Image (cartoon, rainbow over all chains, first blue to last red; front, side, top):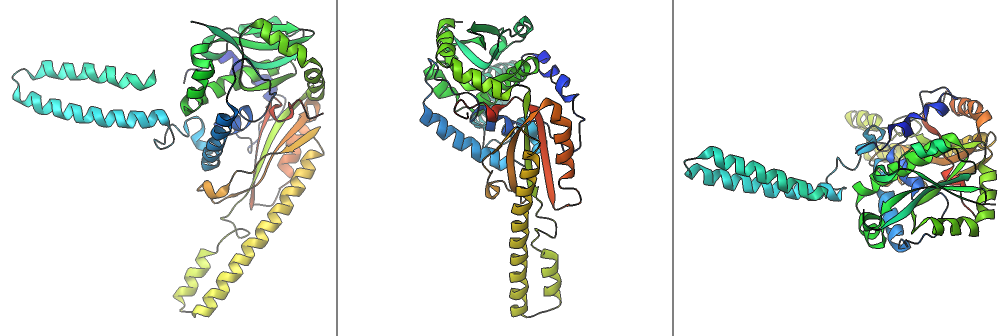
Length: 137
Length: 260
């Protein structure tokens, strides 16, 4: 993930200097952030209506995830990215990788029959890059 | 960017300080200050393709998208909060234009103003307390069971031992609930306000340690040291518990408009 503005996080030191950092302090993990940004704060009806039913379903889903990793503080930022079962985009990538592997194997078999191996390999790589980029969009 | 809207992060009081405009929000867009009757909303433009009703419905279900937006939202709220007393808005509050934001500030002016008064000069601290299952107070005593089996004890004795262990654990948990209540009372005494948050279900965690307290405290800046010190001392010598604390945070849990 890109850090959109490092000066934002840098400004925290102003406050943390007020209290000594102590051994039991934990860095804010995603579970704690989500618990608050989804559920707390001022609720104002904006012009863009977010379906509350959807949000509630989402919140329940997040709760399950939050609970499942609550003690895994060391996982910090990537806690659901690392588990293909929990991340929709990761699931897409797993599937994408599987298809790509099959395709590469098929192409390798084909290329065995061809005289010019090098050119075929290049084609394969080019296609791999393009296809692997798709889930990110 | 096609059609844009204003994504709102937080509200503070005027003057908000021009330094806030040096920050950036979602997708690197510059922060904007929208002022009305002494209140200032901190916003940034967002593409309504991504943050419109249809886009949100789709994107909110995408956990990677949600993670990124939640983190930026939190960073901006933190950034504003370090400069002035500020209240966060819930994730994904979006108006069509500046005038629409002003209309909201106008309608909710008194409620928002009163809430900012309540949180002014304070920050939120989160505290979670766990009962360690691996310690005698919470343990299942597996080692004892094994040694008994090796000694060839009878099934009845085994069951009796098992029953005692279950009982021990129950008593351990009862003590933990008492200890948690006492911790909460102690910490609340240093705080302006406190909130008990929903417990996170240990059955789902795969970790055996039992969460016995999940709470948020609104603490005045001049009592932070005291709060931190008390949270350090409150469970001293009781190794069966672990206390995890974080802060200072913007007062998410205390920014409700109906809390007066």
